[in-house]
Image (tube, rainbow, N blue to C red):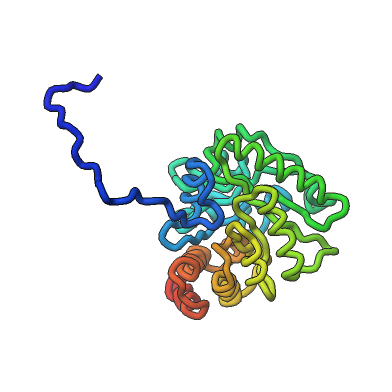
Length: 290
């Protein structure tokens, strides 16, 4: 029991002043439990409401991709500039210093490689996500794929069920097969399905008419960087996506395959959080590359 000596009677009741309510900064998350909000706050900056995720989970289907041959040499020097890390549990455990103290969006499904048919995936044990202190779990969803849509939808639903049990948000990652059109109609459908099935974040691609995709998705969308393009084009992608309603980017190859990766991720960060233009971001990239 506390020592009663020197005890002071409560007297500051704030009478006439309403208790502050939480106007939460993450889209669609106001009614989530405290633990979910805490994890989302680690990912999305409370001041800007945006996030820059550094994606280096490519190896789980592609092996040692260019730029990811040695995670300790290529990725670890970039960690300080990212808001969140998107990676697999194997790379997290083997190559990422625990003292990094960055939130992790853990790739939580695995299955086939690029050598076969993708998305025949299974989920990792949610207890592993807890052990790795994941701030979110990323799970693929292949809408429109006749063979794998139901499989990946079941994975997403199961991940959300388990995430709700333990307070871990799920990111639904929209897959695009060869037969799927990369247009606003498809991405709006796939993104909305992820959200309807309980995903707290959606990762999808930028496209013409993206403002309709973002408007019809009730949770934050982060944009996939896709294949490597010139730095100015990648920064234009970031700027346009944010202007059209994205809550952030999940960049991989356009960062770690850049000629100057540290300069590139800092320029991306400024475009996303500070609202500078793509051209200003490119000037920043050039200055930091010197």
